[in-house]
Image (cartoon, rainbow, N blue to C red; front, top):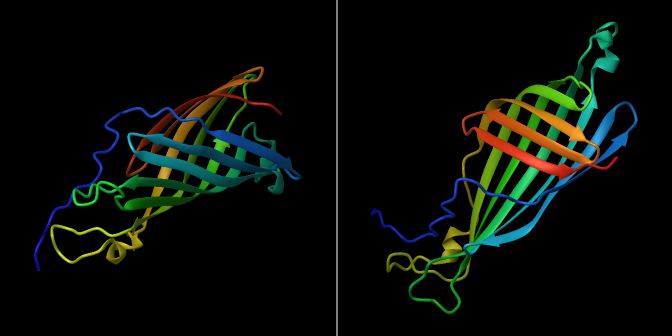
Length: 201
């Protein structure tokens, strides 16, 4: 029947986060591609973060008579991504072995993509649906505001799913094995990404 505050990590307090991400794709029959995305666990300011994702893309114009002659590529894409992070709780009464908290964010997305390859430059547009879920979990003993509330009572708190429509625009520019990519996603929480990578086929 009362509200109490308890300390949490301050966050990274940076506007830009450079991270190494390995992405590999395997082409299959009928213009189908399986993609895997992986980011090794990185620790920064006491927070460890890792990422894993898998996706599939398929060209749909090949199944539509006459329409497959139009000078653009139209594909459907689906993907699943999990972002995992762990950090130590701020417990003044237990500085030797403070309890550890974890937060997992999972996202499932389905997109319709339209692109056109112009030599080394490929612009694209997309519309789709995105669903995310956040799970918070605490391991160890933790007294909250002096009350008999233990960390195990906070185990596996699932936040409400966030479902929304999204649109994105971007491009890919490739010279030999070097690829520059940029993307902007329009959604409730807009995200801009820029990447430079090595692409080998």
